[in-house]
Image (cartoon, rainbow, N blue to C red; front, side, top):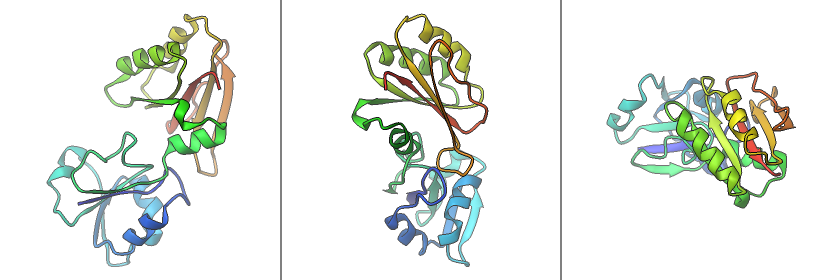
Length: 193
């Protein structure tokens, strides 16, 4: 099995990923990952949307899994097989905001980890780290902002939506009047940056 990172948006495939994609016979991925890779997949390649992520480990060994962003950042890199890295939303966010990656802590609050994600974010901010938070539409951004405001620290907050897509939107504010996400494809950067 091969897990190929297809980047977090259009035009972010690495040269290694492109070369691998040109040889693929069978690929699985989310609709977004398939769309990002489609131009490089052979015409005779069988492409299927992933409908059950729990069954991915049961796919044949010669299968290629397409992972948005980088498979090792909250992606499919946990699967056994070779991992071809991709350009992640973390890398794009850090570049857009001019934040060195060495100052950033990644917090994943996607799916079931909302409460833990909030606790870890608050703890990391107290330690002086800049948090890159991956969340989902059900995550309560207002609750997180309330907890962060209670710290009485001078914090900046950035909402980053649709990174690397034409409709990319980045809004930076402070914790007193923080920006709210308006799209389901978003991440947050929180701290002194």
